[in-house]
Image (tube, rainbow, N blue to C red; front, side, top):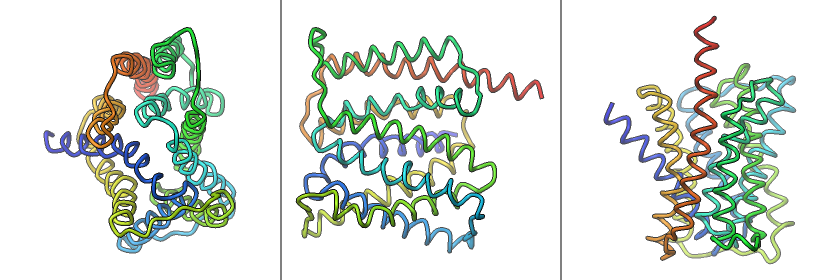
Length: 297
């Protein structure tokens, strides 16, 4: 049990650090090109894993449009908007905004999957919004000036929530590895022309350390960490694991301090507490409701 928690904590540290890693990478690679390159190495990893497990399966024609849409929205646009946003957005603020994804997912699930929308979810959403307002305004509540990069981070959050809903629906008919592989293949193919159309000027580093950093973060963040999480999540209580995942913004704060020398402000800590508290408040009731539904069947 302790070993499982250690591995899950490692995953949270990796995912939380990805905001700072992304901020560093966009200094050397333009966003669309970076998206294409990252997806290329992620696809190589997933294809190699599928071949090793002898798990290469075809997608039915009836599911092709859904998988294609998932690849465009949940993979390509999600990844590209993330890197575009990090060109100017603060990585800690970005992490805090993306931490509210479970709340938006809950609302989308209520609309499209007919899941129940509770008072607790609405209250948690209100608390999280207060936290976002604190973070975005930097404590100056009289003026609201939003960095354009944060708008793209919001797009990242929305596409991530859509990806979760679409994956949840598709997973009823297709296994997760197949969904992940084919959606990333679609995302990579779509990213190829946009890498040359969207980036003006096109920026690419020719330094070996920069490429090693790009490949390493792509493989570790989107490949190894995900596999470790999925392998160890079954050994621990789901509610405790979800609390661990809410620590990502705090990891982003610490990594920003260590790697980017960005000080942690009191306003950021206060906003983070409101946001994480709101997310926990919202998702707790959904889990409780789910357990009651399962036990009644």
